[in-house]
Each structure stands twice: as structure tokens, then as C-alpha cells.
Length: 84
Image (cartoon, rainbow, N blue to C red; front, side, top):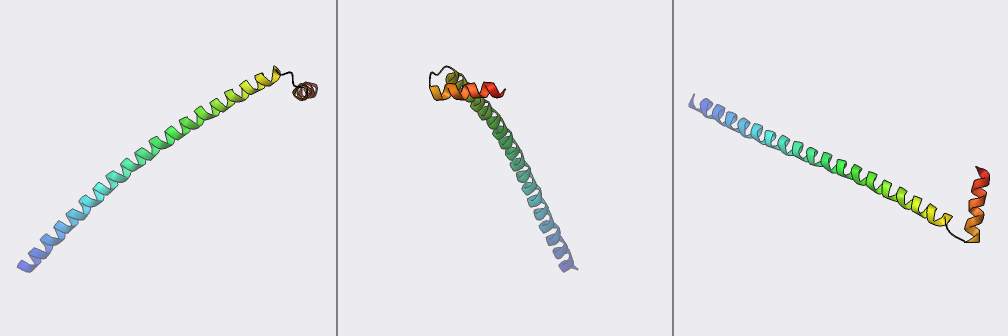
């Protein structure tokens, strides 16, 4: 009878340890997911900013090319206006 009590106590203790470990493990996973989500948000914001920066640089380049006196660039611009 004492052996059964010791075995039951041991099983309950081990079960408690395993349950606590699983809870802690799940908390760590949840924190990792939150960090990954924040990282993805930052990546998305960075992508939008870089895309906007490239768009502005392209617009600047277009404006710079319209001011050029290069005959080749002038011919390309005239061809583009004819196509429109």
C-alpha cells in the first residue's frame, strides 16, 4: 500500500513538472511569435519606405533627364511624346 502511495505521489509530481514545463514552453513560443510579428511589421514598413524612396529617385532622374541637352536623350523624349 505504501508503494502505491509513493508511486502515485511520484507520478503526480512528474506530471506537475511536465505540465509546468509545457506552460513555460508555450509562453516562450508566444513571445517568439510576437517578436516575429513585430519584425515582419518593421520589414513591411521598411519596404514601403524604400519603395517610396526609389520612386522619388526615379522621378528626380526623369526631371534631370528632361533638362538635359544630350541629343540622344532629346530624341528619346520626342519619341515618347509622339507615342502618347
